[in-house]
Length: 530
Image 1 (cartoon, helix red, strand yellow):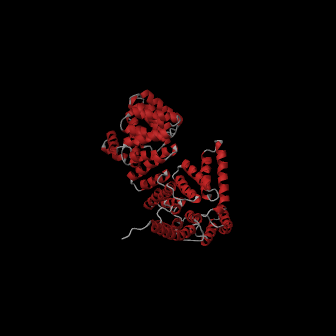
Image 2: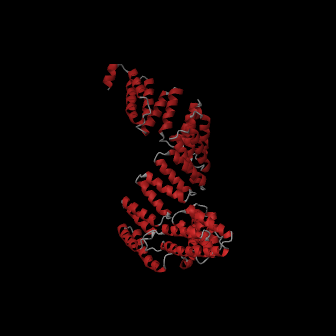
Image 3: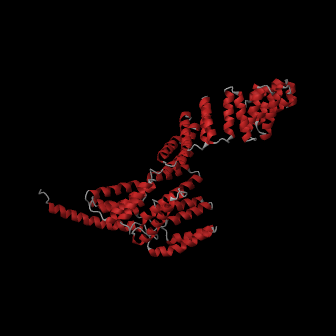
């Protein structure tokens, strides 16, 4: 068999490139149909299939690799899109010819992926590079830059620098509109002129609370322009608001079939499923979002919520932990850490892990006193009274006017036989809230059992009952005080009332209540009492 000559190899490569270009032309038609709002079907899978066939013919055709990346981005395959864009840049650095427009497209794909994973610095850098390479065609890159600057202004509106950021964002938006006619990935101007007045009319109807008319109008727009995801989701949202969840779900899913990259549509669908308490389906939707944006902390947090609703606490903690690792806002991370602590405390029965996450939450957001309260309770349950007291004192520094903290400290001092300070803490709690029955009752117990001041104790118990007439423990303690004075009828009445209230509260031992009543009377007297 004769060896092929270089000329023969070159001619074969030319044939392959010609076939690749022919296949790529068909793929381009499928891809561009995605931006035609009158097309109902999602033809991106067909485009991906044709680009893959073209690459089989010419594996190093770097321009096709960029088109593959752009199509994968639109199909919601963000990780694959990033891989393809990086491959295109690698081939370009290795000497493969890549047009300026295609090179800009690769950077735009990477910038949009970075935007979706909340890596805003990288997104700005990559989108800016895309615009500099091809200013006339990068409308989409400018829109994403506008969103970044808009979000910056929203979060930092008191900062004078945000004014300049806002102006730059508006400039990006203006230049996006200027560049739009030059971009291939756009709606035609003819469709835009037809669509805009119809959308304005529907919007005004919705704003003036004419929901049914707005829905009818949006449905007419959809008939003419079925490829608009925003309109399709709006229809679903109007159905959801008017109490038609199944219709809403149909329209949300329809929008996602046409535009698989439409993250807003997934969030709308997930919220609807949460309202319906369809948590397995809700979890599947958030799993899709996580697959698309694995570095997005919100997505992991929502997925953790879904698993929490399904009582799959191990998976919930796993995704909360990922959200904590990815998140950047301390207040948001504090709430996630608090959720993890609650799960460890209430369901996984891991007090040490719960304390660690409450401590993390308190460091991230020192002003949230609830973390200290729960941490102190866990220390108290472990009989680690020193740490419990230390935590409550930290809480008082964060919020010195919260009566519950002083009441808890009063109890801790009481348990440590420091009666004087216990009374002081309880009285401070009552000063802050004179309707707080717990420290009032506890002061009564101290006066009754430790100080022997029965009359003062009765006054406190009566005050607690006046505040909360369902307070079984206060009735029980008042009964004890009356029994000390030999007032059997009043004592029995209080014990019987406590017994009845305890059916709901479950705070007391019914057998002990019955024993106290029997100790006051003989059997005949109890029958008369009943």
